[in-house]
Amino acid sequence: MGIIIRIMNYKSQIIINNILKTVSAVFVFLIFNSLFLIPDVLAASGINKQISYQGVLKTGAGIKVSDGDYDIVFKIYNASTSGSTLWTGTHTTANGNPVTITDGVFSVLLGSGSGNIMTLDFNDDTYYLGVKVGSDSEMTPRKRIGASGYAFNTDTLDGIDSLSFLRSDEPGTVASSSASAILTITQSGTGDILNLFDGATEVFTVLDGGNVGIGTTSPSATLNIYGNMLAESSYGTIMNIATTSEFTYNFGNGEYITLRVSQNADDAEERVSSGVTNTSSADLDLINNGTYDQEVGIRWQGINIPQGATISNAYIEFTTDAADSGTTTLYFWGEDSDNTSEFAASSYNISNRATTTVSVVWSNVPAWNVVDETHQTPNLSSIIQEIINRPGWSSGNALSIIITGSGVRTAESYNGNSTQAPLLYVQFTTDSQ
Image 1 (tube, rainbow, N blue to C red):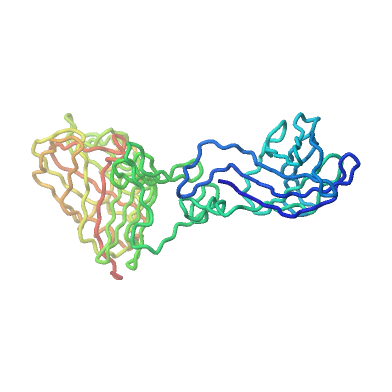
Image 2: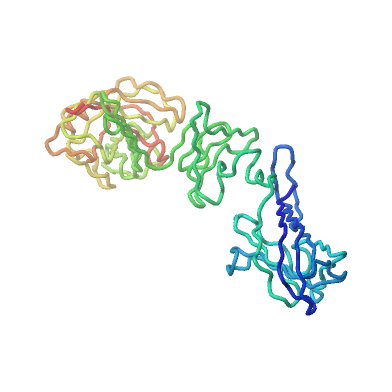
């Protein structure tokens, strides 16, 4: 298949060897051996990037020129006059490849010969061929390079116009009015299903198996998000996950926040007998550490609950650090403060803090027999309510819970495993809900 240009009855006066002659191009074939995809033709893996050019050279009297070798230079331009030279093919004795004419007919492969490699990709529709014989001026007018009927189909893929395809080097849009899926990606191997990049950074990943990662390239769950997340609706904020490990949910009938301890000074142990306070323990011993009893303080920052909100449920979720099953009773108090400060390694730093009038007891705490298993306290909403009702309370402040009692349950601390540090859950409503 090819692009074919037929130039008929073309005459131009030229001088060859000081004799006035006329070139009458009876026919010219331009065959582009490019990657043509038409329904009944397979694409070639390699192509000959040369163009077949044939013509007849005659004298001014219409007589075919004598047989022999002639110097002819071919050029392709981007305009019918002037313009830029896009390619030059030199077929001369000096270049070692003159054009041989027999019985007036010559045939040349444009792109053959030393220094004549065809570098054009023919991705435009304004190409003009110029021909210069010997020492004469280039013939005029230049001839525009056109295409054969079959070549029209080379601008398609399996009969579909090339404009319907996305390109890797230009922005594109996928649009459809079909009821079928607009895009289907099937991964039959073990590689990832989809990777999206912002420059060199992978920002969205779908692993083989379906786990989706946003901000992470190795999602360990069906949806794994690394970073801040915010979801909103007509109710307002539905979910707010910030770098402070705070989760906020709003479903129209109330809001929910979950907030994890976020620094080592926000959970601490104080020895009851001496008041020595430790803010760097690898676990939280509730209450006995095997040698002595302790008070435990836990603080959460950035509590986004407005002053006066109604607290309907609240609890602390602990993660088991060591298995314990002995009889244990825990007492929970709130620190009676508008905005609690972090704990410090100073004597009686926990027990010297003022506490709420309300407390909650967790009697006969169930056995914690499985490491990494989570356990939730009884409802602590009355404690949280007393703190939120303080006149000086403001949304975004910090609050603390102080724990006393007897027995032992061993929970993870921030220092032991920050992702399993104590988690506070609070459900509440406001006047607008």
